[in-house]
Length: 291
Image (cartoon, rainbow, N blue to C red; front, side, top):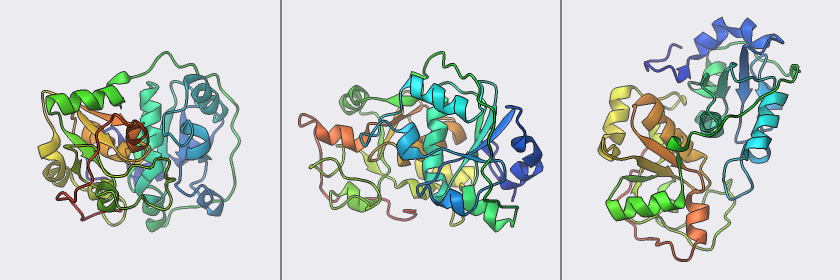
């Protein structure tokens, strides 16, 4: 399956298959990294040569959702046999739900050569490509982070400024969460307050993908997100702990070329602040495509 999107940020299953030998050597030029909502599926099968990142243990600093700190990121990437120059292709289950977050973390720490496998595990399986249960071991590398890309990360003060200045905010959670009814069972609830950030539009992250988990064509993505892109300001995407909003950020920034940030503190951080305003009225929401 060849991707229909013209972006250096994504790779098709066909492209990965064609380069599979390069992803299975000790040389750190290429690395496949699998990141799943359910880490156990990696043991069932994975793409040959793929190493694993456990999203909850490796790239999120506790249930608050904030990105893991620099020293831990350096250790993690180095242990996986990744250098600053490695071409990293990330993929996972559930339409790359958590793989998208790993992509964002890599970009936040200014790793340039990183792509997302369009459609993730499902795309690879549907093509009938080779699977394995063998876990590769690669020589560790030294990975040094020179700084962070703050242009793609949102903070609580950015949300407050967005509210004051009328900048677009997208709540990518499901409509039930948006209305303050319930969080998904797989995402721990760490706050007593429910609802959404005032003025935020509800566009569930799954709107961006097809039934097979691949991204929709650019024209359809622009139809979905166009009204939330402001050429004069940055669009903020958030969810509960910043992982689902990474996919929406990816679409806005990497596929559509918009100025966007992922608020990784997201609802967990916002709702924990009693001074932060919230709404729970059942405002109109985009309900189709809640993956």
